Image 1 (tube, one colour):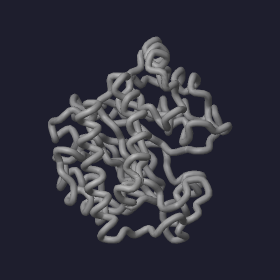
Image 2 (cartoon, one colour):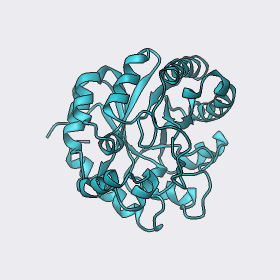
Image 3 (cartoon, helix red, strand yellow):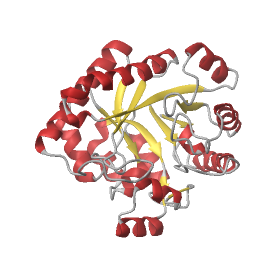
Image 4 (cartoon, helix red, strand yellow):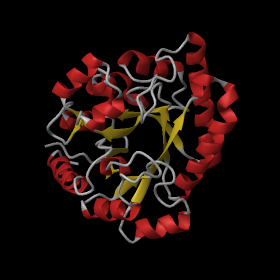
Length: 299
């Protein structure tokens, strides 16, 4: 078994069925912190801004007494829409980046906006970008990377995601080829990439120098086949159980972690099993089993 000395394992509110700052179907933030710590994780992400306390002093106290540290914050952006959205984008990003910095984290996970509404599944814009929109997306993300680095000391890691414009191998590699490696790194989510037909091992082998962060996730290939055939929105696919507990799905995580270790750089690998919405007692046992499985992989 390979010792994954460069990989730091964590979890996130996502693995407790948390997608939104406020939602009556989500567990209270105090319960998430209690259970993620009790499940054997030392690192967490902030999740949707406003779910965890946004006062750094309060959040430091709550995480500190549970032995938790923050690895990253997360933002959603629609930078393909051009310079007109910059001011509103920056207002949101700066709030999240400020809290992320205050918590001692060094990464900001950037997720492109959805072309389908994440709750209703309604199509809100074309799923294919024009050449001009690709230019806006690349230039806007580079600007974001520069501003976040210079003002907050954070590294932008862009997260390919289902039902966004950065999803398939073609679109992920197009985006990476169009952006400056000094300003924009990759957050590879193994589940989302598999969901969209990508091969995580191949991506690490070909674009390893761009990898700055990992999300560990698996999909059920049988459910995924049905989802693809029916054109099911991502939220509905999650409700059907397309994201599953490791090691029951694909891709295999041990080879991905080994390939990441070979890059010989320090990387966070954050467990995210999309489960919104879920019964409140479901996440913790899964989190405990997943942590034991990752230990068996050397992490």
